[in-house]
Each structure stands twice: as structure tokens, then as C-alpha cells.
Length: 136
Image (cartoon, rainbow, N blue to C red; front, side, top):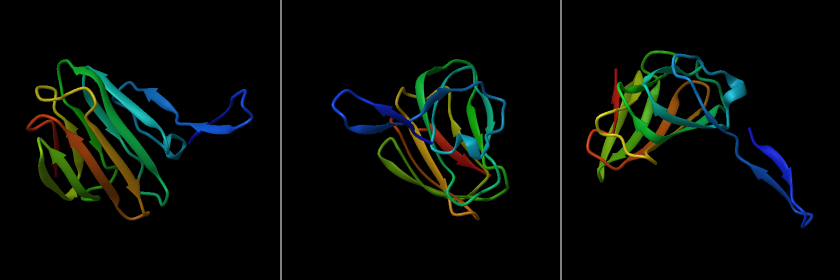
């Protein structure tokens, strides 16, 4: 969800909500529309069950220090789409989770996720080979 910000030139603009998170939690519909900053020690972040209109972005904002950051789909085999990893297109086909790999991450790697209520559709980009993977 965006936050409304009024500037002095009488134009109303919407500012995206950006949030650094502690891994190990579960996201809900209230987190839809946010950009989640990922850095530091890895862990698992679980998405809610697919819900129509849910969308979220994950971006690496600093080095992952000791473990992968895992984005779990909330339900098995619900992630579909593609990742561009080191210039190669990687198919995400009935995946359970996406992984920011701590030995190959780069600041600015990202994954966009949105849902139609049945599946999660994903698109992401990683600079280094193996920087983002899809498993399950």
C-alpha cells in the first residue's frame, strides 16, 4: 500500500512503503504493496496463501552475511514466472520458494511477486550466477 504525501507544489504524490524486515515471519495482506529490503542474516519469510491483488517486492539492500533468504509461497507449488539471473532466463515452474543466495547476492537484486488468488506470479533479476533460485 502506498502512503499519501503532500508536497508544497499542491500536487499529491504516492510514495511506496519500504520496510526492512526481520526474517522468520509471515507476511499478510497488510503487507501488500510494500517493498521489502533484504540484508544481513538470512532466514525464511512466508507469504500468505495466494490472494487476488496481493503484490510485493523484495530487494537486496546489503550483503546477505550467513544464510540464504527464502521467500516461501505459503502453499506448495504456487509460484510461476521467470527470473533473469546473470543474463539467462530461468523458468519458475510450480515452485514452492524463491531463494536469495548469500554467496552470490548483489545489492539491488530483486523479485516482484503478485497473485491472482490461485498462484503467485514472479519476475526477478539477479546480477550474479545463482543469485536467485527457485525450488520445490
